[in-house]
Amino acid sequence: MKKLWRMLSQPIPLMTDKTNKSKGRRYTDKEKAQVLAFVQKVNSEKGRGGITAAAGKFEITPLTISNWLRKAETPPARSATPAKADFADNLRRLADLHEAISQKEAELASLHREYSILKKKL
Image (cartoon, rainbow, N blue to C red; front, side, top):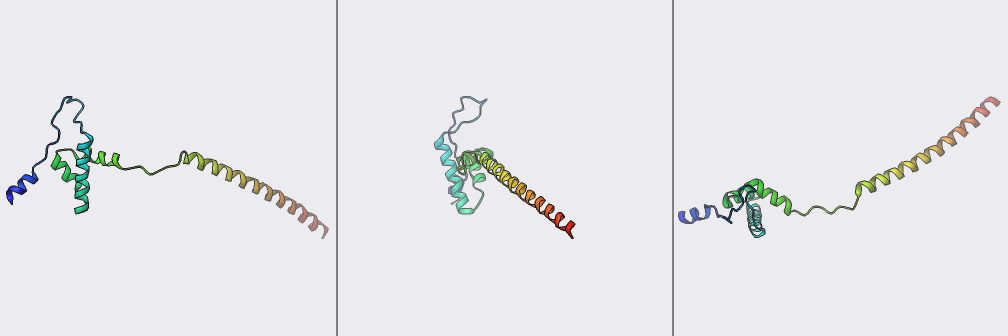
């Protein structure tokens, strides 16, 4: 049992070819998929700790693995230009409100004039 545990706890080296040391280690898509699958497996079993376990097992930094996870996530779908559409809608609504306020102010001014005339007749 101890031998099995020792074998399982040893890091599994991936690709050892380092041709350009100044750029850092490059991983194939297959290697990334293997590491990410391990992370998901550990997280599903234990609830957390997948990145740390994978970092130890595959000798990859946790930051690299978390970057891979972030890139693997599918971003939420967005409309083409929501900010511009919202701005145009808000501008249109402001113009409508301004027009309604102007009409009500004109009506109020007319009522003030009528009130003043009736008050003078008293």
